[in-house]
Amino acid sequence: MDEVFSLFERHVNPGLAGLLRFTGLDRVEDRAEGVYVWDREGKRYLDFLGLYGTLNLGHRHPRVVEAVKRQLDRMPMSVRVLVPEPTARLAARLAELTPGELSMVFFGNSGAEAVEAAFKLARIHTGKPGIITTAGGFHGKTMGALSLTPKPEYQKPVEPLVPGVKVVPFGDAEAVAKAIDDETAAVIVEPIQGEGGIRIPPEGYLKELRRITAERGVLLIVDEVQTGLGRTGRFWGLDWEEVEPDLLTSAKALGGGVMPIGAAIGRPELFEAFRENPLIHSSTFGGNPLAAAAALAAIEVTLEEDLPARALALGEKLLEGLRKLAAEWPLLIEEVRGRGLMIGVEFTDADIGALLISELASRGVLTAFGLNNPKVVRLEPPLIVTEAQIEEALAKFADALAATAKALEGIL
Ligand code: PLP
Image (cartoon, rainbow, N blue to C red; front, top):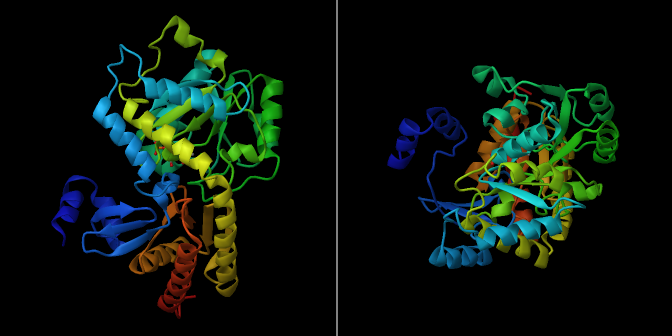
């Protein structure tokens, strides 16, 4: 066994190492470029997972790398008692790119930190503790964010959770209306559930949530950590419904696939607390100049290359190919769904999905299942993926399905 893999197994995460071994991914990554990754033995993979929606620009996009290198040579970290230029410019750019009155930004280093900030700002602003979240929703794993991520396997071992959270079915605006009470500060929702298994709500859902929350004096937080920066075919997932939330969270692709960064962007009144107490919420590294430089470059590349439109067109192609395969293999695949390049293939059984992931890996295509829905294998390739690469992945998907069916002969 590779020494590095055994170090990881011994010192980082033996359970994950076991899972990787089971799917034939007990390899050590070596380098990456665009849509491709190579392991230490020189095997090349098409990265159709894209770090769960982080690698919209692929690995090491030259303009992002260049921006980071320039900042690295100048000043990578802020001293915090002077003002960092890239951070201020990024906040202003995000204010331009988010709907309506959203114009103030808190920076963290991850999606979970963006959600924690939104959670705290909602409570501070309203003076109420309650948050409504959706079944199957995923908002991160720090204590506050985890409390909004209703999955017993993650929540039970660390109870008690942050109190005040109610869970309603995803896609059901009426259920939110019923759950709102005098203690409700906010509703948090993903435009499309990512970890929940690429679940798309009924048309008009976000608009209806906005109408209900506005009417009842409750804040609406839209979590765009996975759907943002063009993934679904629009810059933000909420652009499909032109909804203006009170807070929007972003991370993953915001750092251009080079740096980690998270942001909670909100209406000015939600940030009033910072006037009285500028350090009421803070992070040493949040929005550091290196990460902010990466994000500024990532945003410009996304817009200049019109990657949302590209995601939409290529997503159609990938969806069409996968739907053809689903029709050929009805005993294996239950449904194919998605928007843009955020695509899920729901298998009839989670074990079949796991076998497929393993067959794909051996053929050099990387995918994974949804953390909150292991029956669903999701495909989130970089938005810079080419038609030829999509065809290559589809051909391998077809082979992997045939091999999976063969392995299950006599069982199905
Ligand atoms: N919110 C959503 C919608 C996510 O998909 C994720 C991660 O998958 C998170 C929050 C948490 O982000 P992070 O893993 O960067 O903490």
